[in-house]
Picture 1 (cartoon, rainbow, N blue to C red):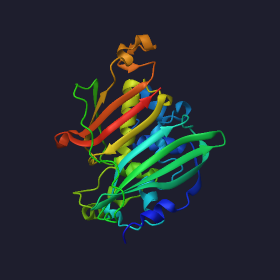
Picture 2 (picture 1 turned 30 degrees about the vertical axis):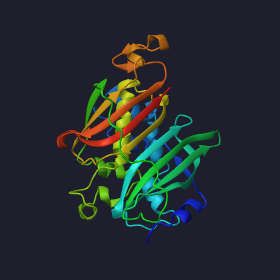
Picture 3 (picture 1 turned 45 degrees about the horizontal axis):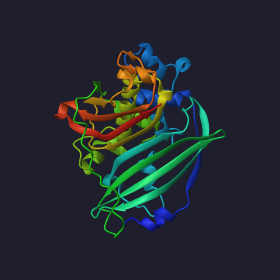
Length: 308
């Protein structure tokens, strides 16, 4: 049935209690590729409970509930075929660092429904807070093929902006394990698109694809490790547009651009150059991600990490 945009937008927020501990955080980190090399001190901060720091993108799976895409499809007024659904974008705003263990309230609702003619785009916003106040705000943008045409607002353009014209400041390649999607889905995203070859074929893919949020997390880890000396608490916000898929076993090529005057040239801002990291100041990093084996096919676009 077509999407009932008015019903989805007018529905009461869905509220649920969530909880997590170090085991959930460690599993998530392993699911996005942390822990290689296993004894590297820089990796142990993601995998060893006595040194554990929480990568902020863990917020997308905290509590083990359905991720944004699946949660959106269960909203009132939304009854669509999962095989016609694509994750279009993700935005995360951090109000405080994510703790290693916590108990919080998550309040989710559809805040936008756009009519693209031959498709629909839904935006699900989730606000999470605990007894001490807000923790994070998360938005998932979901593209549904064949569900437009009700005469609604078209919304913003979905075309990715071109990458910066200047050469990137850093280029890092990250290999994706053949079983990465099977490991990542243990954090709560059971969409068969990422594990079942028959379902993937019905959705139009040659084989199961990696979760977009797995690439999202792996990319943030690369930026934090490369430019912020592994300090996860400096991340303030993170957004991306999913421009293409990744197949398990491929290699991600992460390109990073910093604004002029940031970090490496930023002694006047309290920054120092140390192994390519920025140790002071605030700013943002522009990022693109591509699949090396498929002629640099675009994977993530319009990607920005804001730090402080």
